[in-house]
Length: 309
View (cartoon, rainbow, N blue to C red):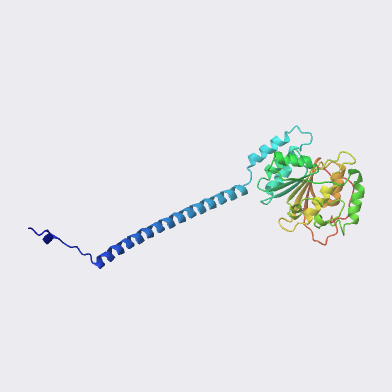
């Protein structure tokens, strides 16, 4: 009988060999883990770098776009079509160009305050497209309607307490209070001066306005508010600037009107009148010291009209 057990072989695995296999697997796992982590780190870094580059490029492009002035051809086109308006109260081309020229030379960004929502409202916003433009109007419903129709417009309403027929009394009261409530340099938010507007949004008193246009409210009848308060307020805001350009350009539209000329002489001052036409007065005021108690250097106020050229 053949012994079947004679060819039987026993394979014995040494513990060292088992340990060596385990070690190799661990090294392989570590190798794969290292390269996985390296890949993820590279991916995250690349994404962050790309994102940062895009953000920087976008910011640079936006900054360049914001600080680039409107081309002359665009400005001239806007002025041309604005002056062709069929609205009875629209400005003449020569007056539009005078204000436009000042806006073009204004430091960027330019702060432009306008009393009155007029046919030129969208034009002023466009010409000062890289600056701050704020409108003040006496009609709260029209201001709300205009903002709803044109969300880019920043308009606020104000309640005037003056009457055109009371102009002389209001001027006399302001001159009597020139050292107190009606000071030429002050924060009108805390003033009780009858001619000062103290119920505008707080930030209006904090901005250093470079250009102010008085083109409202209307004053065609005795009980109309007239433009006494906006002219007085413009003078105080210009003289009370804290920083920025020390000079402020103040324009008064409908300059042939008695209220516009008289209040302009009293509170914006003849020595500051640099240019006039039949319908536009252009003043340049400088900021003054807080202790000032005179609106004008030449204190001989006159109720007469300014000269026209």
